Image (cartoon, rainbow, N blue to C red; front, side):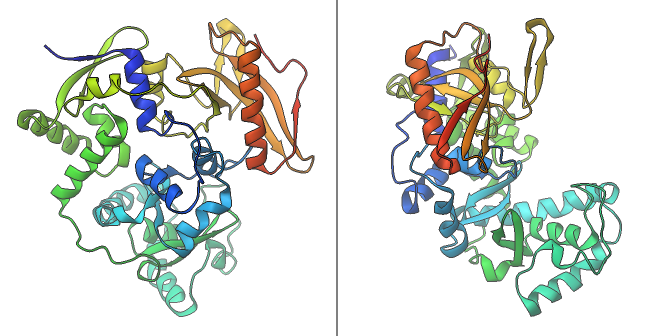
Amino acid sequence: MIPRLENAAARRLFLHRHGLGASPSGPGRGADLLGLIEALGFVQVDSVSTVERAHHMILHSRRTRYRPAHLRPLLERDRRLFEHWTHDAAVIPTAFLGHWQHKFARDRAFIERRWKSWRREGYQARFRPVLDHIARHGPCRSDTFAEPEGKTGEGWWDWHPSKTALEFLWRSGRLAVTRREGFRKVYDLAERVLPPPRPVPSEAETVDWACAAALDRLGFATSGELAAFWDLATPAEAKAWVADALAQGRVDPLDVIGADGRPRRAVAWPGTPAGAAALPPAPGVLRILSPFDPALRDRARAERLWGFRYRIEIFVPAERRSYGYYVFPLLDGEHLVGRLDMTADRAADTLAVTALWPERGVRWGAGRQARLDAALARTARLAGVSRIAFADGWLRA
């Protein structure tokens, strides 16, 4: 008989594996911050900053003493983290760098095929000039090359050839991001930024590590979810890994019960249901999550576990609801209770709350409001503003 993981237990296990099942205490810097990122696996980097950039909000929701300045030493001085690609741009522990040697090669082959029709021609001819320039003159940004090429551009993704060359050389491992200026990448030769990975694992070892390490961080997963976690193993490789692990008894099949009561077959390490039953409940803290939070990155999984249908932009005509482009999910203990529209107006020294939509069936009482007020005060400190202002009619039906 296939063991079952009931919905409440599945939610609790999932939150604990994503750093949201414990108190958000701790220094949020140095070894504590590095340990948090290693436990998560990576932190997605995103440029959108209506309140604070996504990676800072992800870390702050788990360590309320975290501040954006705490990340830079690990990235730019100690090199305990590096910036590269999982499913998207991310900050990744340097301890995992050996496994990225295979991703460099796979990304190179993938983007060579894709960029033939997606990028302007001529970027391949810029590889050698760009590498020679950086070797002679040191780290540079993409705008170092923009003016000589007469670049005017037609939008965010209309890159000039040297910008495309820089990104290609970074994705394929020849260059590394040595620091950010504002949010602009500063590139240098990889050997001047990253330690040499010793030893480099085989491709088979990387696939095994990627699937096992993803399962550690998810608690339960399908083969597709294992492949998508790091984007190191292909779906076919992850499917084969699951089949082998089941045959060897390394993992067990598990029926995970969704919010709608329906089971979904996954795999988990042996003893997972008992381990989930022994976990303490998440503390009664309301957290404002980034839309790019790793617990919500897979929108379909969030809907299965919580019944929380979340897209960055959504219009629900039947309910006369329209959510903005960048609304923040609210996690209260173990429950997703609403979504919040807010911005940090630094010129006015204000965190402006425009709207809050409670989820269906959620009562917004005095206790929950007090927890929201505390969360907003923490978020205001992260954003560097001192006032919180609520728009008229901010609490929506």
